[in-house]
Length: 210
Image (tube, rainbow, N blue to C red; front, side, top):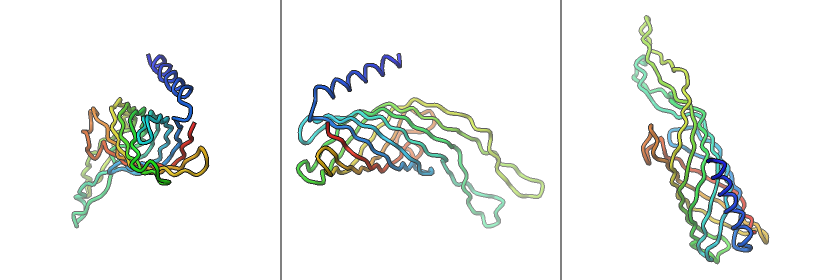
């Protein structure tokens, strides 16, 4: 089933490329992702754009992101001042996505073409999850122990929106910069737009016009 799906997508993309000379482009970009309450990570994206007119295009993209720990703060009762310490409940996150959407050029005739976009698609996420257990030692101190990691795998529906600009550098090549806000839903652990399911990203890359 998965192989058939990939073949269909490949045929559609290749057909669009063959019959849309001068109206399409490939976009290559990479950047940094900032999940809320987590360590930052890295991402890379390959995107195909098809121009409907001078202001609007549709796209299909595939991207991969990776980051490490999700942090939380807890009250350390062994601290006489009642201070807070930081721990982590998740680690080794990877996120693979296939997205489709549209991009609107706000200033299509400018050298710096400002745009907004929005998309939706499928996400596959993996990470390790831990439980933290409080241990009261005989000397009155308190320490926290982590359980062995359990691997979590999730199939998610993803939404994204972004703003950025494109600037031509030579005949067929543009540079681009974009900020995106992303969230995923139908997770058994996190809700839509919660701090656990929302992350932002900064992408820098190149756009090659076919």
